[in-house]
Amino acid sequence: MMLYLHEIKTILETARTKAYQAINSVMVEAYWEIGKRIVLEEQHGKERANYGEEVLKELSKGLTAEFGRGFSYANLRNFRQFYLVFPDPEICYTLCSKLTWSHNRLIMRVDDAKARHYYLKEAAEQQWSVGVLERNISTLYYQRLLPSRGVMPVAHEAPQSGSANIHQFIKDPYIFEFLNIPQPAHFSEQTIEATLIENLQKFLMELGKGFSFVGRQYRIGTETEHFYVDLVFYNYLLKCFVLFDLKIGKLTHQDIGQMDMYRRMFDDLKKPSGDLPTIGIILCTEKNETVVKYSIMNDTPQLFATKYMPYLPTEQELIDEIENEKLRFNLLK
Image (cartoon, rainbow, N blue to C red; front, side, top):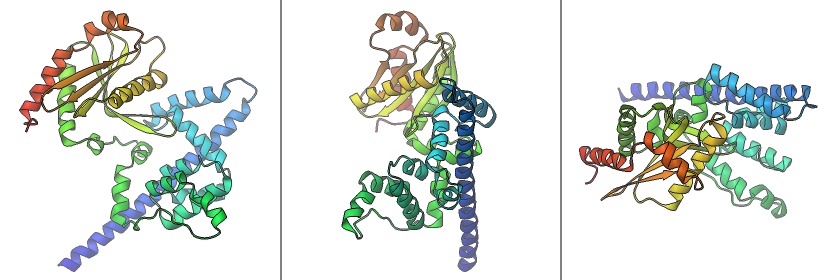
């Protein structure tokens, strides 16, 4: 019986590994083809100022409407750079497609062409994880290898089993985007935080002050890094985004700085022309108290007081709601 069970598990693991490899290869190759097409389009209008930027913005709108998330302006810039760095289709199909998109995003930012090829080849052959690849690039392993004319210590890890690869595959946000499948929010949140956020979402929707739900664990990023905001709303009375981030423990300056960064990113990447600046609200649940911190432009306190506060939950309302939920789910123990 145990042998029978083991054989079936092996069949499933092998099938899932093949599915992972197939989807990953197709995704990387598709991004290379998209990058190539973008470059060709830009060359048609190279005499027009800012034509390339216009192409990416319009393309982002069209692809997002049709295929969902994953085609932001920043991501399209990455596709374009991917093609420009690796214009040889043979390199793309024989090496790049053997690695994940996360691997390729790291390697394509290496300035030295020989170093890039080395990292591509070694990462594929040695099955480096993204973390190992990043450490080897950041420690300039290739550059240190040249004068040594031999083998130097390099970050390694045990080869990953098929089940480990599948676990990474299931969590990979790029796969969710490529297949246009919603990413479960609990992948990047503790159970306690997820419970509080879920109830906070309901509370804000029932508050009746113009909140329209946008998303949980909402992903926003630059060309090189991605971040997740716990809750994102759009307030149609204020005409602005409102971001909520929950912290378990003491509020720190880093938490405030992070929220300010989220807010500025939303203003740069998401805010429609004519809307008010994005609001950020940090909820910090300590053992004995809950702290609420509003994040808004420092030079506009009057704007905040007169335009924002009538439509936002008060500090006391937010504290009471969080404290009630903490008591309800026995989080004070």
